Length: 350
Image 1 (spheres, rainbow, N blue to C red):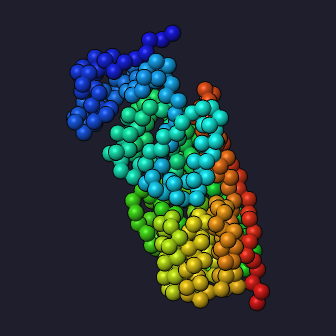
Image 2 (cartoon, rainbow, N blue to C red):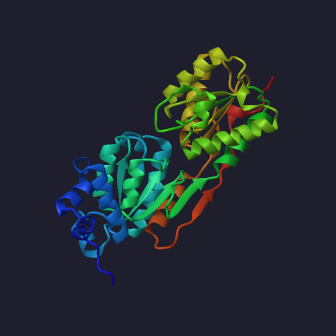
Image 3 (cartoon, rainbow, N blue to C red):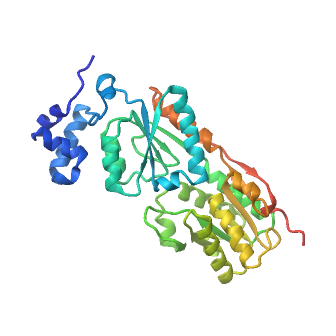
Protein backbone atom coordinates (compact mmCIF):
# COMPACT_ATOMS: atom_id res chain seq x y z
CA UNK A 1 0.00 0.00 0.00
CA UNK A 2 1.36 3.39 -0.98
CA UNK A 3 2.51 5.64 1.81
CA UNK A 4 0.17 8.59 2.47
CA UNK A 5 1.75 11.87 1.46
CA UNK A 6 1.95 14.31 4.38
CA UNK A 7 2.11 18.08 4.45
CA UNK A 8 5.73 17.82 5.61
CA UNK A 9 6.56 15.92 2.40
CA UNK A 10 5.05 18.73 0.33
CA UNK A 11 6.96 21.36 2.31
CA UNK A 12 10.26 19.58 1.76
CA UNK A 13 9.60 19.14 -1.97
CA UNK A 14 8.74 22.84 -2.32
CA UNK A 15 11.71 23.99 -0.20
CA UNK A 16 9.58 25.76 2.42
CA UNK A 17 8.71 25.27 6.07
CA UNK A 18 5.75 23.13 7.08
CA UNK A 19 4.09 26.29 8.46
CA UNK A 20 4.37 28.05 5.11
CA UNK A 21 2.96 25.00 3.33
CA UNK A 22 0.08 24.91 5.80
CA UNK A 23 -0.67 28.60 5.21
CA UNK A 24 -0.72 28.05 1.44
CA UNK A 25 -3.76 25.81 1.90
CA UNK A 26 -5.47 27.42 4.89
CA UNK A 27 -4.40 31.08 4.79
CA UNK A 28 -3.23 31.69 1.19
CA UNK A 29 -3.11 35.49 1.62
CA UNK A 30 -0.13 35.06 3.95
CA UNK A 31 1.99 33.38 1.27
CA UNK A 32 3.51 35.08 -1.77
CA UNK A 33 1.83 33.97 -5.03
CA UNK A 34 4.99 32.47 -6.52
CA UNK A 35 5.62 30.47 -3.33
CA UNK A 36 1.98 29.31 -3.24
CA UNK A 37 2.25 28.04 -6.79
CA UNK A 38 5.46 26.16 -5.98
CA UNK A 39 3.76 24.49 -3.03
CA UNK A 40 0.65 23.60 -5.05
CA UNK A 41 2.76 22.17 -7.84
CA UNK A 42 4.69 20.01 -5.36
CA UNK A 43 1.40 18.87 -3.83
CA UNK A 44 0.06 17.91 -7.23
CA UNK A 45 3.17 15.96 -8.17
CA UNK A 46 3.20 14.09 -4.87
CA UNK A 47 -0.54 13.41 -4.94
CA UNK A 48 -1.17 15.30 -1.70
CA UNK A 49 -4.92 15.38 -0.97
CA UNK A 50 -4.96 18.50 1.18
CA UNK A 51 -4.98 19.10 4.93
CA UNK A 52 -7.04 16.63 6.95
CA UNK A 53 -9.13 18.24 9.66
CA UNK A 54 -10.88 15.22 11.10
CA UNK A 55 -9.43 12.31 13.02
CA UNK A 56 -11.54 9.95 10.96
CA UNK A 57 -10.03 11.25 7.77
CA UNK A 58 -6.56 10.89 9.22
CA UNK A 59 -7.26 7.31 10.20
CA UNK A 60 -9.22 5.99 7.22
CA UNK A 61 -8.81 8.57 4.47
CA UNK A 62 -12.60 8.95 4.45
CA UNK A 63 -14.47 11.93 5.86
CA UNK A 64 -17.92 10.48 5.27
CA UNK A 65 -19.19 13.68 3.68
CA UNK A 66 -19.66 15.39 0.32
CA UNK A 67 -19.07 19.09 -0.32
CA UNK A 68 -21.68 20.87 -2.46
CA UNK A 69 -20.61 24.20 -3.93
CA UNK A 70 -23.33 26.68 -4.94
CA UNK A 71 -22.52 29.91 -6.82
CA UNK A 72 -25.03 31.84 -4.70
CA UNK A 73 -25.45 32.56 -1.00
CA UNK A 74 -26.68 29.94 1.44
CA UNK A 75 -30.09 31.58 1.76
CA UNK A 76 -30.60 30.97 -1.96
CA UNK A 77 -29.64 27.30 -1.59
CA UNK A 78 -32.38 26.86 1.02
CA UNK A 79 -35.05 29.01 -0.65
CA UNK A 80 -34.79 28.53 -4.42
CA UNK A 81 -37.16 25.68 -5.44
CA UNK A 82 -34.69 24.12 -7.89
CA UNK A 83 -31.79 24.29 -5.41
CA UNK A 84 -33.99 22.67 -2.75
CA UNK A 85 -34.94 19.82 -5.08
CA UNK A 86 -31.29 19.30 -6.05
CA UNK A 87 -30.29 19.08 -2.38
CA UNK A 88 -33.14 16.65 -1.77
CA UNK A 89 -31.71 14.35 -4.40
CA UNK A 90 -28.16 14.65 -3.07
CA UNK A 91 -29.39 14.07 0.47
CA UNK A 92 -31.40 11.03 -0.58
CA UNK A 93 -28.33 9.28 -2.01
CA UNK A 94 -26.08 10.37 0.84
CA UNK A 95 -28.56 9.00 3.38
CA UNK A 96 -28.49 5.66 1.58
CA UNK A 97 -24.70 5.53 2.07
CA UNK A 98 -24.63 7.01 5.58
CA UNK A 99 -22.78 10.09 4.31
CA UNK A 100 -23.21 13.74 5.34
CA UNK A 101 -23.40 16.90 3.22
CA UNK A 102 -21.45 20.14 3.58
CA UNK A 103 -22.78 23.14 1.63
CA UNK A 104 -20.31 25.82 0.53
CA UNK A 105 -21.43 29.19 -0.82
CA UNK A 106 -19.20 30.68 -3.51
CA UNK A 107 -20.66 34.17 -3.06
CA UNK A 108 -17.54 35.32 -1.19
CA UNK A 109 -14.59 33.76 -3.08
CA UNK A 110 -12.05 34.23 -0.28
CA UNK A 111 -14.30 32.54 2.28
CA UNK A 112 -15.21 29.82 -0.20
CA UNK A 113 -11.57 28.98 -0.93
CA UNK A 114 -10.84 28.73 2.79
CA UNK A 115 -13.89 26.47 3.21
CA UNK A 116 -12.77 24.26 0.32
CA UNK A 117 -9.23 24.02 1.67
CA UNK A 118 -10.43 22.98 5.12
CA UNK A 119 -13.46 20.89 4.17
CA UNK A 120 -13.42 17.36 5.54
CA UNK A 121 -15.10 15.79 2.53
CA UNK A 122 -14.42 12.92 0.16
CA UNK A 123 -15.65 14.61 -3.02
CA UNK A 124 -17.05 17.89 -4.30
CA UNK A 125 -20.20 18.54 -6.31
CA UNK A 126 -20.20 21.90 -8.08
CA UNK A 127 -23.53 23.30 -9.27
CA UNK A 128 -23.89 25.69 -12.19
CA UNK A 129 -20.51 27.40 -11.86
CA UNK A 130 -17.83 28.39 -14.35
CA UNK A 131 -14.53 26.50 -14.16
CA UNK A 132 -12.49 29.63 -14.79
CA UNK A 133 -12.10 30.79 -11.19
CA UNK A 134 -9.98 30.34 -8.08
CA UNK A 135 -12.59 28.30 -6.19
CA UNK A 136 -12.57 25.53 -8.78
CA UNK A 137 -8.77 25.66 -8.83
CA UNK A 138 -8.74 25.19 -5.05
CA UNK A 139 -11.03 22.16 -5.38
CA UNK A 140 -8.83 20.65 -8.09
CA UNK A 141 -5.77 21.01 -5.89
CA UNK A 142 -7.41 18.70 -3.38
CA UNK A 143 -6.98 15.80 -5.87
CA UNK A 144 -10.40 14.45 -4.93
CA UNK A 145 -13.43 13.46 -6.99
CA UNK A 146 -15.17 16.42 -8.59
CA UNK A 147 -18.67 16.14 -10.08
CA UNK A 148 -20.09 19.02 -12.11
CA UNK A 149 -23.83 19.68 -12.22
CA UNK A 150 -25.35 21.85 -14.96
CA UNK A 151 -21.89 22.99 -15.96
CA UNK A 152 -18.76 21.78 -17.72
CA UNK A 153 -15.58 21.69 -15.62
CA UNK A 154 -12.34 20.41 -17.06
CA UNK A 155 -11.00 17.57 -14.96
CA UNK A 156 -14.36 16.61 -13.44
CA UNK A 157 -14.68 12.84 -13.12
CA UNK A 158 -18.41 13.05 -13.78
CA UNK A 159 -21.02 15.46 -15.08
CA UNK A 160 -24.81 15.62 -14.84
CA UNK A 161 -26.55 18.05 -17.19
CA UNK A 162 -29.83 18.58 -18.98
CA UNK A 163 -30.26 18.58 -22.73
CA UNK A 164 -30.82 22.32 -22.34
CA UNK A 165 -30.47 23.08 -26.04
CA UNK A 166 -33.28 20.81 -27.19
CA UNK A 167 -35.44 21.65 -24.19
CA UNK A 168 -35.26 25.35 -25.03
CA UNK A 169 -35.79 24.62 -28.72
CA UNK A 170 -38.95 22.67 -27.89
CA UNK A 171 -40.20 25.47 -25.63
CA UNK A 172 -39.82 28.03 -28.42
CA UNK A 173 -41.46 25.72 -30.95
CA UNK A 174 -44.40 25.31 -28.60
CA UNK A 175 -45.02 29.06 -28.37
CA UNK A 176 -44.71 29.32 -32.13
CA UNK A 177 -47.34 26.61 -32.45
CA UNK A 178 -49.53 28.62 -30.08
CA UNK A 179 -49.37 31.58 -32.47
CA UNK A 180 -46.72 33.79 -30.86
CA UNK A 181 -44.81 35.97 -33.35
CA UNK A 182 -42.91 38.59 -31.34
CA UNK A 183 -40.64 37.15 -28.68
CA UNK A 184 -38.78 38.10 -25.53
CA UNK A 185 -36.30 35.87 -23.76
CA UNK A 186 -36.00 36.37 -20.01
CA UNK A 187 -32.54 35.02 -19.25
CA UNK A 188 -30.93 33.80 -16.09
CA UNK A 189 -27.76 35.61 -15.01
CA UNK A 190 -25.27 35.13 -17.83
CA UNK A 191 -21.99 35.54 -15.94
CA UNK A 192 -20.73 35.72 -12.37
CA UNK A 193 -20.92 39.52 -12.59
CA UNK A 194 -24.33 41.10 -12.01
CA UNK A 195 -25.75 42.84 -15.05
CA UNK A 196 -29.54 42.87 -15.08
CA UNK A 197 -31.72 44.40 -17.77
CA UNK A 198 -31.52 44.47 -21.58
CA UNK A 199 -28.78 42.29 -23.08
CA UNK A 200 -26.79 43.59 -26.05
CA UNK A 201 -24.94 41.25 -28.45
CA UNK A 202 -21.72 41.61 -26.44
CA UNK A 203 -23.46 40.52 -23.25
CA UNK A 204 -25.08 37.59 -25.05
CA UNK A 205 -21.70 36.50 -26.37
CA UNK A 206 -20.08 36.81 -22.94
CA UNK A 207 -22.34 34.25 -21.24
CA UNK A 208 -20.10 32.00 -19.14
CA UNK A 209 -22.79 29.79 -17.63
CA UNK A 210 -23.50 26.66 -19.63
CA UNK A 211 -27.24 26.70 -18.88
CA UNK A 212 -27.64 30.21 -20.28
CA UNK A 213 -25.54 29.47 -23.39
CA UNK A 214 -27.36 26.24 -24.21
CA UNK A 215 -30.88 27.49 -23.56
CA UNK A 216 -30.26 30.72 -25.45
CA UNK A 217 -28.90 28.76 -28.41
CA UNK A 218 -31.94 26.47 -28.36
CA UNK A 219 -34.41 29.36 -28.33
CA UNK A 220 -32.56 31.08 -31.15
CA UNK A 221 -32.39 27.93 -33.26
CA UNK A 222 -36.16 27.34 -33.14
CA UNK A 223 -36.98 30.98 -33.82
CA UNK A 224 -34.46 31.16 -36.66
CA UNK A 225 -36.18 28.16 -38.27
CA UNK A 226 -39.38 30.22 -38.15
CA UNK A 227 -37.70 33.20 -39.83
CA UNK A 228 -37.12 35.21 -36.63
CA UNK A 229 -33.55 36.44 -36.19
CA UNK A 230 -31.84 37.06 -32.86
CA UNK A 231 -31.85 40.79 -33.65
CA UNK A 232 -35.65 40.74 -33.64
CA UNK A 233 -35.85 39.20 -30.17
CA UNK A 234 -35.88 41.22 -26.95
CA UNK A 235 -33.36 39.80 -24.46
CA UNK A 236 -33.65 40.67 -20.76
CA UNK A 237 -31.27 39.37 -18.09
CA UNK A 238 -33.05 38.77 -14.80
CA UNK A 239 -32.15 37.97 -11.25
CA UNK A 240 -33.75 34.61 -10.47
CA UNK A 241 -36.35 36.22 -8.25
CA UNK A 242 -40.01 36.62 -9.25
CA UNK A 243 -40.27 40.17 -7.91
CA UNK A 244 -37.35 41.21 -10.10
CA UNK A 245 -38.62 39.52 -13.27
CA UNK A 246 -42.08 41.02 -12.68
CA UNK A 247 -40.54 44.50 -12.70
CA UNK A 248 -38.42 43.68 -15.76
CA UNK A 249 -41.46 42.30 -17.59
CA UNK A 250 -43.65 45.31 -16.85
CA UNK A 251 -40.93 47.68 -18.10
CA UNK A 252 -40.31 45.53 -21.19
CA UNK A 253 -43.99 45.34 -22.15
CA UNK A 254 -44.32 49.11 -21.76
CA UNK A 255 -41.43 49.57 -24.21
CA UNK A 256 -42.33 46.66 -26.48
CA UNK A 257 -46.12 46.26 -26.51
CA UNK A 258 -45.80 44.01 -29.57
CA UNK A 259 -44.35 41.16 -27.50
CA UNK A 260 -46.75 38.22 -27.48
CA UNK A 261 -44.43 35.37 -26.45
CA UNK A 262 -42.13 35.12 -23.40
CA UNK A 263 -39.52 32.38 -23.09
CA UNK A 264 -38.31 32.33 -19.47
CA UNK A 265 -35.21 30.36 -18.47
CA UNK A 266 -36.70 29.41 -15.11
CA UNK A 267 -40.15 28.99 -13.63
CA UNK A 268 -39.30 31.53 -10.93
CA UNK A 269 -38.64 34.11 -13.65
CA UNK A 270 -41.75 33.03 -15.57
CA UNK A 271 -43.98 33.42 -12.49
CA UNK A 272 -42.71 36.98 -12.18
CA UNK A 273 -43.45 37.50 -15.88
CA UNK A 274 -47.08 36.51 -15.26
CA UNK A 275 -47.25 39.09 -12.45
CA UNK A 276 -45.68 41.75 -14.66
CA UNK A 277 -48.12 40.99 -17.48
CA UNK A 278 -51.06 41.29 -15.09
CA UNK A 279 -49.78 44.63 -13.82
CA UNK A 280 -49.77 46.01 -17.37
CA UNK A 281 -53.21 44.68 -18.24
CA UNK A 282 -52.01 41.93 -20.57
CA UNK A 283 -54.19 38.81 -20.59
CA UNK A 284 -52.35 35.46 -20.55
CA UNK A 285 -52.63 33.48 -22.79
CA UNK A 286 -54.85 35.52 -25.15
CA UNK A 287 -52.55 38.58 -25.40
CA UNK A 288 -49.33 36.99 -24.21
CA UNK A 289 -48.07 33.42 -24.02
CA UNK A 290 -45.53 32.44 -21.35
CA UNK A 291 -43.50 29.29 -20.84
CA UNK A 292 -41.03 28.60 -18.05
CA UNK A 293 -38.36 26.00 -17.37
CA UNK A 294 -37.99 23.57 -14.42
CA UNK A 295 -41.45 22.33 -13.45
CA UNK A 296 -41.54 23.61 -9.86
CA UNK A 297 -44.70 23.01 -7.84
CA UNK A 298 -45.53 26.73 -7.61
CA UNK A 299 -46.16 26.79 -11.35
CA UNK A 300 -49.31 24.71 -10.87
CA UNK A 301 -50.81 27.39 -8.62
CA UNK A 302 -50.31 30.51 -10.76
CA UNK A 303 -53.15 32.25 -12.59
CA UNK A 304 -53.19 30.88 -15.21
CA UNK A 305 -51.14 27.76 -14.39
CA UNK A 306 -47.67 27.93 -15.93
CA UNK A 307 -46.63 25.89 -18.95
CA UNK A 308 -43.05 24.73 -18.51
CA UNK A 309 -40.27 22.37 -19.55
CA UNK A 310 -40.12 19.91 -16.66
CA UNK A 311 -36.84 18.49 -15.35
CA UNK A 312 -36.39 15.89 -12.60
CA UNK A 313 -34.10 17.92 -10.36
CA UNK A 314 -34.25 15.43 -7.48
CA UNK A 315 -32.96 12.67 -9.74
CA UNK A 316 -30.27 15.01 -11.07
CA UNK A 317 -28.97 15.55 -7.54
CA UNK A 318 -29.20 11.86 -6.70
CA UNK A 319 -27.23 10.84 -9.79
CA UNK A 320 -24.53 13.42 -9.06
CA UNK A 321 -24.14 12.16 -5.49
CA UNK A 322 -24.10 8.57 -6.72
CA UNK A 323 -21.17 9.35 -9.02
CA UNK A 324 -19.37 11.26 -6.27
CA UNK A 325 -19.59 8.26 -3.95
CA UNK A 326 -18.62 5.75 -6.62
CA UNK A 327 -15.12 4.55 -7.41
CA UNK A 328 -15.95 4.21 -11.10
CA UNK A 329 -14.47 6.33 -13.84
CA UNK A 330 -16.19 9.50 -14.89
CA UNK A 331 -19.04 9.82 -17.34
CA UNK A 332 -21.54 12.39 -18.51
CA UNK A 333 -25.25 11.89 -17.86
CA UNK A 334 -27.61 14.00 -19.96
CA UNK A 335 -31.18 14.15 -18.68
CA UNK A 336 -34.19 14.88 -20.86
CA UNK A 337 -37.06 17.28 -20.19
CA UNK A 338 -40.73 17.18 -21.12
CA UNK A 339 -43.38 19.79 -21.85
CA UNK A 340 -45.99 20.38 -19.15
CA UNK A 341 -48.79 22.10 -21.04
CA UNK A 342 -50.90 24.39 -18.87
CA UNK A 343 -52.94 27.55 -19.23
CA UNK A 344 -50.21 30.13 -19.81
CA UNK A 345 -49.57 28.98 -23.38
CA UNK A 346 -52.89 27.71 -24.70
CA UNK A 347 -54.06 28.89 -28.12
CA UNK A 348 -55.86 32.25 -28.01
CA UNK A 349 -59.61 32.04 -27.90
CA UNK A 350 -59.97 35.11 -30.11
